[in-house]
Amino acid sequence: MKRWSIVVYRGERSSCKGFSVSDSFLTAGVVFLSLFFAFFAYLAVEGYRNRSMLSHIIRLKMERDKLLRETECIMSSLEKLNTEIQETISRTSLLASLARRPIPDRYTLMMGTGGFPEKMPFHDQTVSSNVLKLKNETEKLKNILAFENKETDRAIRKLREKERLLMATPSIWPTYGRVTATFGWRRHPILKRREFHKGLDIANFRGTPIYATAYGRVTFTGVRNGYGYTVEIDHGYGFSTRYAHLKKILVRKGEYVKRGQLIGLMGATGLATGPHLHYEVRILGKAVNPIRYLDNSPVVY
Ligand SMILES: [Zn+2]
Image (tube, rainbow, N blue to C red):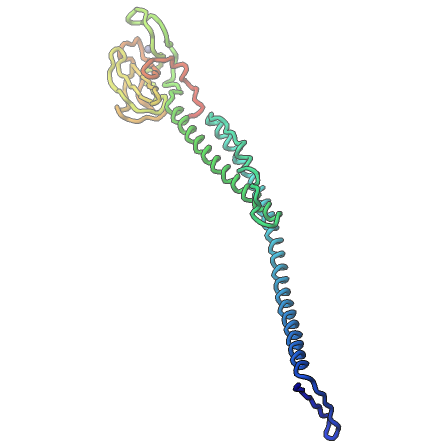
């Protein structure tokens, strides 16, 4: 069997030391040393990997804590926003009540989009719960805002319609003076027969100003049989008014007039015993008692 000898010299004259090993022993030694170094190399690499993984984990943990703080911050902002939205809701309710709209039922909106789904989106329970809460709250606020916007638009439309109706409703005295005849059956002062008086007579000096009692469009100016010089105004929404026995007409047919606009002067044209205004209010062409349409408007134009 082949043997390997290793000789070691120490100094110039000193004796030399040597030993010999067999081939297989040497091979076993080389293998052992290789394995030994490989094991240490592995340990070194693993140690490095573990160290970098640990720092990665620490970084992730820090980020998670930061994320949690952020979500909590957003949640508290959402809570503040929720309080402000409650204020908006009360205003919308007030607007709805002014517009005489039914106060909307917001119960379902307040409840949000429903409970948590069974599956958590993240492994971490706290992060999952925070993210789901945020999603739920945001969705709820989005729904509330969309609903409130729609409600406000509806209430504004209704209020505008009411405003137009108010503008079209006769609601002021057409002139100043003394009421000499009211709406209803009476004996005609000139014709001397019982007949239905379809308006209100207000007497004053010749030339007393006569005003339109609501917004509208002049549909007639001229002489009407028995009424003398007459102005008729269509106010829309079925309302029309008639102003008769005028001395002078100050508007033209087709003209738009405002409430309180001067349209003529008091006279005694037609069948009249003296200067007075015969004032009629009609709904869909049917004469109604004008007393109900004097000074009852909450709005003054
Ligand atoms: Zn009359």
